[in-house]
Length: 472
Image 1 (cartoon, one colour):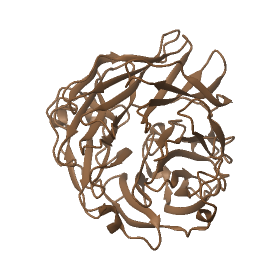
Image 2 (tube, rainbow, N blue to C red; image 1 turned 135 degrees about the horizontal axis):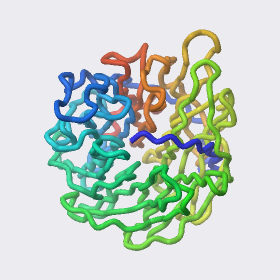
Image 3 (tube, one colour; image 1 turned 90 degrees about the vertical axis):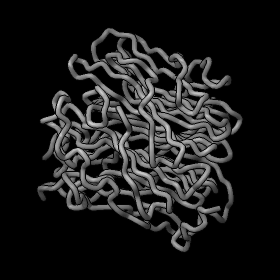
Image 4 (cartoon, rainbow, N blue to C red; image 1 turned 135 degrees about the vertical axis):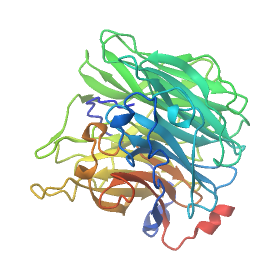
């Protein structure tokens, strides 16, 4: 769902060394760049869904992506389809069985009216894969007849790499305020997966929470919600992301906006018993001012402040987030923890000075860290365009040094019709391959082919590499 918090989130980066010679490795290249969203399957609309007449056919936002741990050639992406000012017709899933060369699109049964359900809208799609090859989807299904909407957290699962899905199961029943879900499959426990979400509204004072549920039967049923964190009456937590560390520790990372204290920050909460209980969250990074950033020509800039998190094979946890100081200057923060989320170091991603937003972080099988983001370094005031590019920085030495690669663009955000939805949604997707990364992200014109925006896929990795090695 659309969330506008003006959390000027701050700093982070990775400090320490792995192999001294790795930093001199060659540049990454972009391969298989293509639009994967295609024409809308709902061009005729969804009769019976509230506000369906306001949805924009071919408007796709908010991409997430996963690589099947049991079959690295199997890549799965998801996004919001036909997004309007107040609703979305449904979430879609696309799967590839050949490393991203070709894609098949499908729907999630009973997610919304469009796919046989009763919900007026779907939102916040997320995908993950477990070590046994099960692919998991989570999202929101909302009834728009109330204000705020009553929203359920729902999930589905696929045993054939994302080709087919059963009807959604309810993870959390409809409530006013369920938001920003994410799902994570266990890499080691067959049939186990974990969903986290926030529950908040902007009616203060109010108690806001981050909550957790797990499945042990491959997504057929889900446990009652467990409380991870509960804020004070004038704060809210949002966008939790869950990592499974190699020792089985569950680590949930989230952002908090505290209106009473006057700052925002990031937090990490740990569970040592597979989510049954959670230790008090640890705040890390600086206390950051609550600010909105406004472009001189086009108004509010994208300000979602949804952190992205990843874990390396050696257990190092990473988080990336916006760290902007004005509408014309800023950057991306990256933080890391090498002790299971107890302590963190942070700094800035080098080489980023323009306004930057929606970072996504991942780690490949060899421990290479990648961060993808949009920034406005090529925007020119007065040229009638709001110019953004997609970039990726990678580090072979846990963040001691970085190299940048231009992924896509320039694109004109102004041609995307929903600035209140950050033009491209609230987050984009990045997943680690054996060598390099699989990326899913939103582009408007001039790149979009079907409607105002499209979801694009790219492999980003060593220039002399080949995706054939992902068969191993």
